[in-house]
Length: 329
Ligand SMILES: NC(=O)c1ccc[n+]([C@@H]2O[C@H](COP(=O)([O-])OP(=O)(O)OC[C@H]3O[C@@H](n4cnc5c(N)ncnc54)[C@H](O)[C@@H]3O)[C@@H](O)[C@H]2O)c1
Image (cartoon, rainbow, N blue to C red; front, side):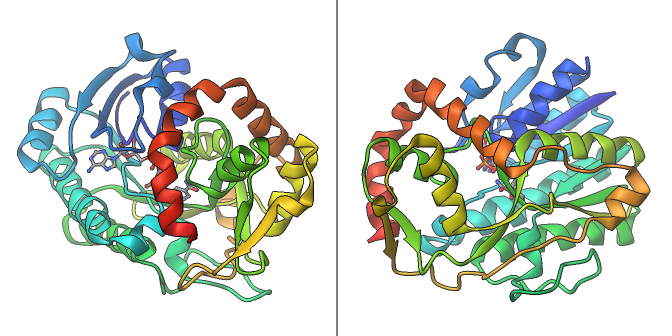
């Protein structure tokens, strides 16, 4: 099986590529290498993949890659992925997440691929209160420019299945964490700030709830879906490991043995969704997949990885300082 993986130099995409190489699959990676993309994540598998530095919005180049490589399966991870950045400027989110997805769907349709795995997110559903869960048929009511762009891409996939019969499967994972995550997302930000004993910015009162999925579990779920999923279907991929942001921060401080008075509550993110929670009965029953990594185990592994890889993180810090000023001021 030949896989074409977009966003394979990103946080989750690179985990998926490493696992694909381990399985002996033929992998083509297409990635623009934005600020969030980094080939270092693929250093252990570099010589076993084919890499194209390409923007998924570049229709001609994408068509050329598809016609040349003739992949069987497309796994589409590439995206602008950070909610806070989408609040500062929505344009790249619409361009990459919406237009880019359309370019890929067209290229896949023109080639006649066997499967197109469209990676969406739990954020497409909007927000929940303290109770309730999102099911695959829950209406999409996204709130941030990021989640709206992802919901559009999600619906475009549906349209290509319904209209052209393109074998699209939609995957909606919950919040991922783990090794190689770019240090602008909550968990690596907290680890770095705590290590440097700097104030740790927490939005609002820290009561927002996210469902934490370890990155290797997310990638494994997608392989199971490739094997057993049905075209035209949607699968939630969650862990059941719901935690309030403040609980996540305290768990990290505890592992690092740092004081809780580093926690600094900052002005809430505009339109901040309160809670996400995925119902995962469908993937459990139809595919037989369930997340393995419990939050306490995953967060230990994650903190350890950052401690062992501080040189990688430090390369990103100069760029991040200005960004941090913009979002947390
Ligand atoms: N991180 C999460 O918690 C989470 C949860 C649910 C869904 N997702 C989805 O999973 C996917 C991967 O998320 P991530 O956290 O690994 O993201 P990431 O930001 O770490 O990686 C995104 C990758 O896409 C590449 N990219 C961006 N724009 C591109 C373009 N125009 N052309 C080609 N490549 C481009 C980047 O260079 C980068 O390598 C995204 O679609 C995201 O919406 C993420």
